[in-house]
Structure formats: structure tokens, C-alpha cells
Length: 183
Image (cartoon, rainbow, N blue to C red):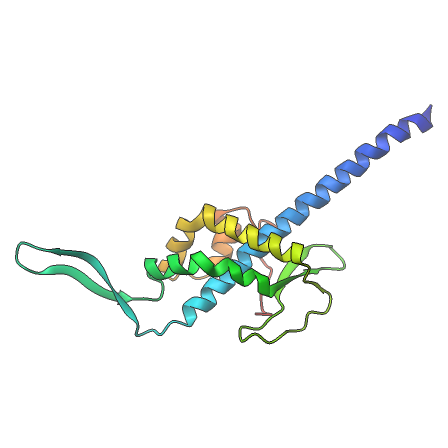
């Protein structure tokens, strides 16, 4: 009788284990995509010439003949950030997945430098499915959190990564202390 109870319990245990493993993997991918997205945005913003400006305001002529147009820095402008968000997830193809041997948690690291040179990708999974999953997760994050991303980056907020990925969302609820020094 005890043997028959074990036979029907085993599939439940296996399904429970797989469900937990998949949930953790999903959490790791969401966190990695969020952190990679923020790293890429910060780098792109840093590459803009600080002297570059755009005109902002109304182009209507006021009753006194003047216009309410001001020059603002292009970097971190809503226009610039919106343009960045349109293509930033393409950069996820330059990442790979590493698995911590002790915790089995996944992290995502650059496998190509910003100038296109290959970085050390030992023990890094660069399988197309992994990259596609990271990229589509990044696109989903941009779609859902576009307004928050623009708000945080336009105000030059420090620790955007922790504020968006951990505090405002639950994308990295487990990983506030993860660093991205490899970038």
C-alpha cells in the first residue's frame, strides 16, 4: 500500500520542482533583461555630446510676437529617451547567460564589448533561445514600463537600476545587490 502512494506522489513532487525552477528562471530572465536594459540606456546616454541641444516648447507665436521655445540638452530629453527605447533591446543579442554553480541562479553578461570585440564567454550560454528570450523580455519591460523609464532617466536619477528593477517593480526582488561590473 505504501508503494502505491509513492507512485502517485512522485509526479506531484516532480511537477512542483519543475514549476519552482521555471518560476525562478523567469524571475532571473526578467531581472537580467531589466538590468541589461538600464546598463545599455546609461551607456547610450553617456555617449551623447553634452553640448547637443534640441528646441522644446510651443512653436506658436505669442500675442507679443515671441515664441515659448527653449533649448534643452538632447541627452535625457524625452525625444532622445524615446528613440533609445525603440532599439535598446537589440543590444540584448550581445549578452549571454551565466549560471551560478552554487545557487543555480542565472545572470546575464555582455559577451561582446561595445566596440564589437568578443569578451570572455567561458561558462556562458549564448544559445539563440537564451538570447531571444532575453531580448523579448526586454521588449516587454520597455512596453510595460516606458513611462517610468523616461521619467527616471529624464531626471538623471541615481541608481535607476535598483529603483526600476527592484523597488518600483518586482523584476529583481531577489537581486538588489547584483552588480554589473563586467560592463
